[in-house]
Image (cartoon, rainbow, N blue to C red):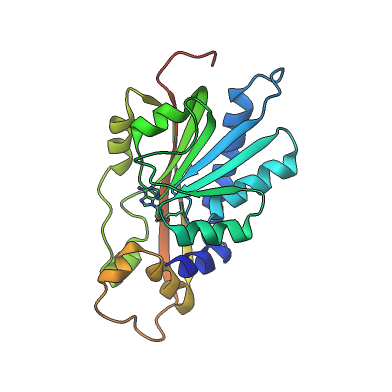
Length: 235
Ligand SMILES: C[S@@+](CC[C@H](N)C(=O)[O-])C[C@H]1O[C@@H](n2cnc3c(N)ncnc32)[C@H](O)[C@@H]1O
């Protein structure tokens, strides 16, 4: 799953998601701390996988040289953390279950990102600085729909983003939501990797059809930004 995910992401198929995440992250980090307060920011990726999004964010923010940031990715998978740490040398990775413990102190995180991974409102609320933000990437029900109609992949619940917004409230309040949708044309290798990086691949009984593709698939996600429900100096 991890090598399939890395190959797929390295081919740039989800780069528009990473790009938009970087824009939102920069806006939040710039906003969360007044320019006069030149403190070190902390960014955590909860459910970081092999590190693609946190690595992209670290590279984006480092290039801009606007602030000093420390980065932590956490994942329950030891193999994922190891793979991430080998590539992203300036980022820390820790094996941890985000529902049990994000291994940082209370109110210490300026930006928490969470992409296609489980969430935990209690732990997110505990670690978030009062002026911090959470950016969550959630698939829409039409995400990869063409792949789902060809392969028996696990479905995506309708209005998933609305459920997350309701579950987060009142600890985390929605500040911004935006859809991101585009089409990809995937060749056979990319289809094999996309199916292979999905948790459903374990349930696939039929082997992938040799020579399948090219296939046009829809990428449809929502990026949700949350702020803490507690009062802060945020304007
Ligand atoms: C679909 S992958 C997404 C990985 C990465 N965010 C990305 O988009 O490439 C979900 C990730 O969440 C991790 N994960 C699942 N449950 C977790 C938990 N309770 N705590 C931390 N990580 C978890 C998995 O190991 C996996 O790496």
